[in-house]
Amino acid sequence: MKRLIIILFALAAKAVFATTPHELFEEANNAYQRSEYAYSIELYEQILDKGLVSAELFYNLGNAYFKNNNLGPAILNYERALRLRPMDEDIIHNLEIARSRIVDRIEQRPLLFYERWWKATYNLQGVDGWAVTTIVLVILLLVSIVSYLFSRTMALKKTAFFSMLFLLILAIHSVIFTIKQHNRLFSQREAIIMQSRVTAKSSPATQSPDLFLLHEGAKIAVRSSLGQWYEIALPNGTVGWIKAEAMEII
Image (spheres, rainbow, N blue to C red):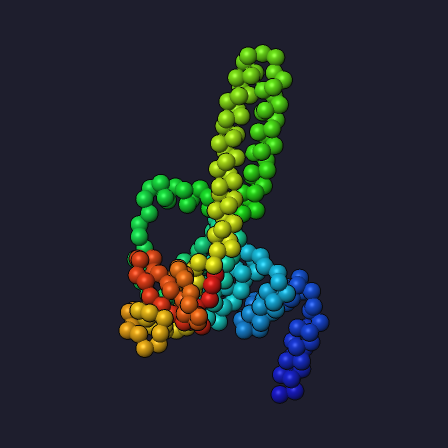
C-alpha cells in the first residue's frame, strides 16, 4: 500500500512539474507505453488545453482513446490528425481500424471518377504543403516572365512563354488546393457521434418523431443549428436532428 502511494505521488509530481508542452508530450508517450492510457489521455488533453495542436498530438491521443475503449474520441482525434496530414498512412490505417468497430454501416454515395481524382490530388498535401508549393510556383512563374522579357532569341522566348503558361496553370490549381485544404481544416461542417446511442428526430424538438439511430463513432455532416439542436446529414443523404451534446465538431 505504501509503495502504491509513493508511485501515485511520483506520477502526480511529474504531471505538476512537467509544465512545458514538450515535457507533457514525452510523459504522455511514456504513460502510453506503460499502458496507462487514461493518464496519457489526461496529459495529451493538457497540451490541447494550452492551445497547441499537431498531427502527432491528435494521432497519439486517438491511439490512447482507442486503447482505452473510447471509440468516439478516438475517431474524432484521428479525423483531426488526418486534416493536418491527409496522406499519412499510419493515421489512415488506424482510422480505418477504428471505423471497423462502428455499429452503423452507412453506405456513401459513390464518387465519380473525376471526383475521386480531384480529391486524391488535393489530399496529396495539407494546407501548409500546398501553401509552400504555391509560393515556389509563383517564384518560378516570375522567373519565367523575366526570362521571356529579356530573352534575345525566339527559341528562348517560346520556351519561356510555354513555361509561363504551364506554371500559371499549376499555380492556380495550387491556390485552389490550398484554399480547399484550409476550408477543410477549419470547417465546422463535420462531426463525430460521441454517445453510445443517439436517436435522430424529424425536427428540433424532443417530442418529434424518431427517424433513425446513430451510434458512437459515426461521422455526420452538420447542415444547420437551432439552439441546442443540429440538423445533420448522413453520407447516404438521410437528414435528421440531434442535440449538440451528442456529437463533437471535428
